[in-house]
Image (cartoon, rainbow, N blue to C red; front, side, top):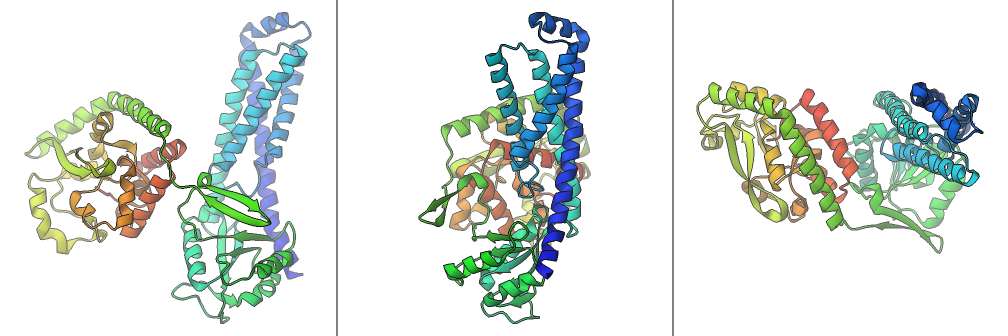
Length: 487
């Protein structure tokens, strides 16, 4: 009885959220379809379209727009774009919306060709991008609403972790990094579980042993069971847990300890009843490098042209505020470990590097490898303002233009920092360092060294063009609401 109640309660928010998306999608598509019709036909294009095909009339297009909305809604449902598995995090929701829309309009084009109905192409060319744009904006707004609620524990799956103490602790830590994903850890079942105790140095309550999973679930405490390690569970035990869950209301997740690996690199392949997980090794093809370089060139050229007045003003401010050169050039380590000269507006006094040794013991930010000091006495007043909004880094656009840096990538380190790297950290040199990156939008100076490395290596091993655009958007947001700096 308790499990059923919990399952119903769990499904209620999922159903309510899907219903809200359904009505919002309908509202958006009505505006897109009829808006495109009004925009296209208001300038006299209706009569041109009707003359091209006498079977169509003004009324026909009003009916066609209504039918388009209905079929478009149906297409979004067919691809499960409102499924709880894709909402809240990741790009799958937006990808499904776009794919369903393009597929639908492709079918319409083919059907119009086969039936020789000359539907106004201009109308379709307006309706498709307008509809996709409005749908993505609408879904994004709902996602922000959902994330806000999930940050306080609402609208989330209640997860019971099952496995070894080490694996449970690791998976719990990773899930808590991303509350927007919608998984709230409520407890754990471990091999030597002692009820009413917590797991190690965490606040995760132990609810029993591996043999107590079914009873814990049936109390209604959890609606999702996540198996974090199968070494402590024989295959039949995993099956028994799966059979005990109420179909459609309670869920089973296999959570292998594969962290910082993006979805495109993971493929599941069933072989003789075994769900084998294939993890592709990171590849950087010539096409990928050409695509990234093309984006860097285009955006850096446009950026330099657009912000050239601001660059001139900042250069004058630096020159007039303190003695010394306007541009500070420093040797950093880049692609494949080669050194290059990184450009920045000078934000410190001229002899800043000579004063560094005397400040090491007074550091109060950064981490064990990166030196940071919140009130660094070497920073000039103008430099402090520029650093707050990352304006001192704008000259690095010329590094991007020259090819030594990319717009997005790992943080460019000093040679003295590289000397302290463990072997695996050198993988960050597989790509060019970036003006911004996951390290900048992920916490900057508040990050520990391990977290900084994790973000950089995750970026290197899972690079995508869409991911670069997301980081650039997050960088703009972080620059407007700065919380720290990682120079």
